[in-house]
Image 1 (cartoon, one colour):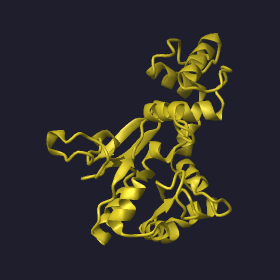
Image 2 (image 1 turned 45 degrees about the vertical axis):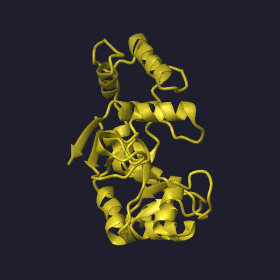
Image 3 (image 1 turned 90 degrees about the vertical axis):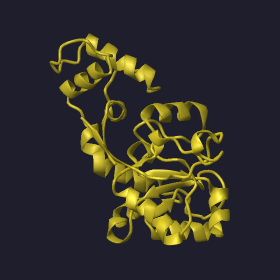
Length: 239
């Protein structure tokens, strides 16, 4: 079973809220989303410590349910299990607010973020779709494999995909018994955990595919298993 390693990010400046609870209107960030992979948290805090400025964010960790909802209501959103947000490797910033606060052009801001290990989805330093999205690759040798993975692309999505697979890929590959166990955990399968993918297991697979907007063929292919592993994952959250 996939165990997601996450760490809480303190004091995230958000873009939400009405001013209740002592948080100024427009500054609230939901605690449930203030999570990143443990390797990414120091890099996020280092940006703020090194610049003396707060990063204003609109998104960090995104649950599979939140990814599904976003996918159904917005364009260009990765499905559950395929977004860096699902694994704590990605953040979205409020670009206009950050450029104003940091007093930087978009290129200067991107280069500053990269110096701390955060790489913008767009490599062209232009404004537009996904100019707010940054993936954590780290610096120096740590960043090298992820930068190599997206070297021939105009975006960095292949890099974060490579990082997700390298970190959790083994957990995306399920045996038949593991498949049945996870479907049972989600209360979609009530049969024996015998590894026999018969009619009952196939009906459970179909139910999962229907619920998570996957092609409904009753086949546990790589995409179905990766989605299932993500949806049924446990979280190990350190403070």
